[in-house]
Image 1 (tube, rainbow, N blue to C red):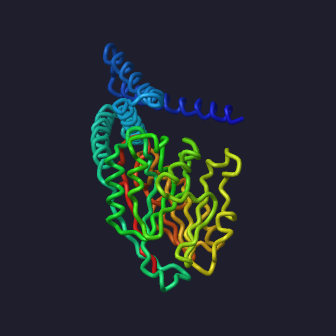
Image 2: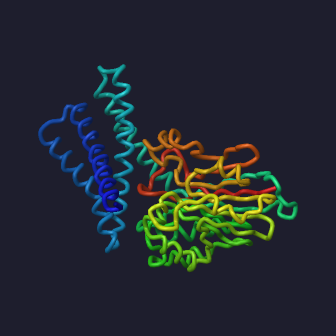
Amino acid sequence: MKLISFLIFIIIALSVYFSMHYYVYHRLVIDLNLSGRPVLYLKIFLLVMGLSFFAAEFLSRAYTVKSLIYTGSVWLGILSISVSFFLLKDILNIFLSHHNTLLTTICLFLIALSTGFSLWNASQKPVEKSFKLSLKNMPSSLSGLSLVHLSDIHIGPSTSLKQIQDMVSQVNSMAPDLILITGDVMDIHVCKMDRFCEALKGLKARYGIYAVPGNHEFYNGFNHFLELGKSTGIRILNNESVRIAGLLDVAGINDPAGKQYPGLSPDLVKALRNCDKTRPVILLSHQPLHFQEAVKNGVSLQLSGHIHNGQLPPLYPLVYLLFKYPYGLYQFKDAYIYTTSGTGIWGPPMRLFSRCEIVKFILQ
């Protein structure tokens, strides 16, 4: 059954991926009136670039091919941006049908501009954000407690050790009492590459570091994630909770991707079972799901990620349609949820409408 589901997913993904290439090809050939050798060169270019992403993914399992991985990832980003602009162009074309070539030329300029900006934007260090939150039942002895929220670090084959070391230094400079990580830490077996585990050991917080698995932890091996936790001192919460200073509970729920593994399905009731509802309860959930149900069960603050605030079009508008709490701070009754844009990036090393971020909360 798992094999059939995987094959269906691969077929759909490949169909969408190569349909995007055909759409870009069709737009350029028709709108720019290309013929002869330019069409041949365009076909070869799109074929080579289209296959570069899959070649990088395949070869990276056995070899270090960072340049090919980078090329394939950037191309995926350029393709996504191109499809988005050409779709907008086709909508405009309904009203400006006599300016087809001009609109396509403008699109190419905007694609190049957006690509350059997205690459630069994603290369910047995460922006630091800070919020003061008044939580119900907050003990006066813990007032002023600071926690740092990380998510979607996505350590992968193209991640440099310096990037992780810089992130660790940035987090430590914020002097958190707690560090809470809402999944997608790893896209590879982290502890076997470039001393990443050693770097993550450098994270410091008075009351410790806690994390829940994201979908990528299940894709890449939940046991590897547990090994990461043991190697770095990060406590992995598997549908369970932990009490902090005897006065506050941090609970963690598994990502829905855990459903394919026995005993690892998300279970909110189990995660909150041992929490003291007369004290603040913080829920870590990779995806911004369960919030209203969690509030009914005593949660004061939920931290989530997963969505990357869209990262690149066409995902940016889609996540705002698909998720109720896509990005930022929201309130329901006397509780809050914060969905971060993520500390890192997945896939293309590019961000158009968002920034990587590290978020600090001061509880009172």
